Length: 176
Image 1 (spheres, helix red, strand yellow):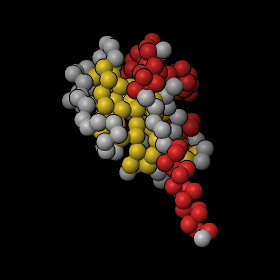
Image 2 (cartoon, helix red, strand yellow):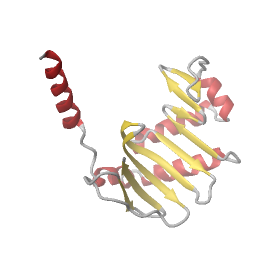
Image 3 (cartoon, one colour):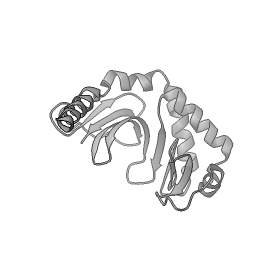
Image 4 (cartoon, one colour):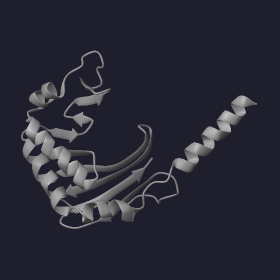
């Protein structure tokens, strides 16, 4: 009986707590800080340089992840590094990283990514919830080409919702 009560309570907590933000809430993150998003775009493109991709965030820089206040290379938890070591390896100064962190606070985001691929896309992570195999994320993205199209519909299984903003920026909200 005790296990059944625990299972029911857990189910209700999990289903009651999942309330993803509305499109309007995520768009507001962009519309109230357009200059800051532009600065993030400029910085990440500059800092990526000749590398194929670069991520800079509170918990992820290049190929390094923050775990329990230490940094590790691609989740190699045996080799702990300091933030100074990580920044030196990826070619960022501490001052530059501090600039990123200030912009993350102003944009209500946590990570920015840029890759030199067919379409040059800057991705600013503004929302995430769930597990790596199932969850939702909201990205404010900039693309030097036509943005992707929406697929599926919110509340009807997996979906990707694209909301155009301006100057090449759009909201990409998806759940799997």
